[in-house]
Length: 210
Image 1 (cartoon, one colour):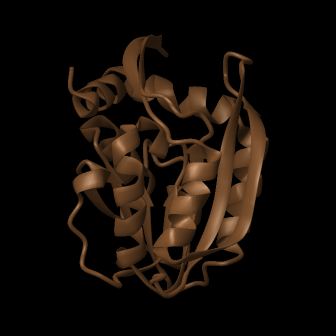
Image 2 (cartoon, rainbow, N blue to C red; image 1 turned 135 degrees about the horizontal axis):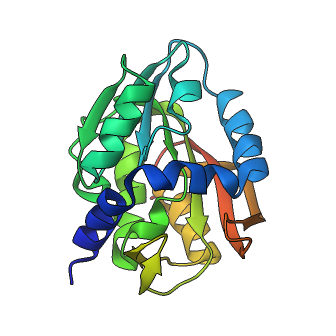
């Protein structure tokens, strides 16, 4: 099956059950990272959130800023729009999103790269670099695992997961031209009290390396 269809249909099916499930797990890490992000993104900035989901972080990101949220699920987009009526929302696959170069001061993405096939991670990182203005920041979490897999029952629906691992992610960011300001692996506890590790990164746009 198409991984993108699995992700889209999965989140459409999960719907309103996802927000409380997500907020119940990883809340301490999520709050820490959101604070680190907001301290680097001033008021008046143009912010793009990839995989905005139901808008769990959209309110904070949009406060005093121009906010654009992207998600592959129409159900998630509708929920996020209700949280931030002033925002711009795009229902689209983030890996094929067409955004003009140097459009944003910050790109934010939590728990989303784990839904991309592993062969799309590096090209998507390169696209984010192009979307950012000089000195813009990319604030994101990445899976530490390296496999592509389908979980048949994830919060009540099939879900696709993919990753390239810690070392390959950091290498891709640096090779693309990002300078890492924060790079940390932290353990999360999800709503089912299962432990899982993610790589948390804040990377600032610099010149692409030769």
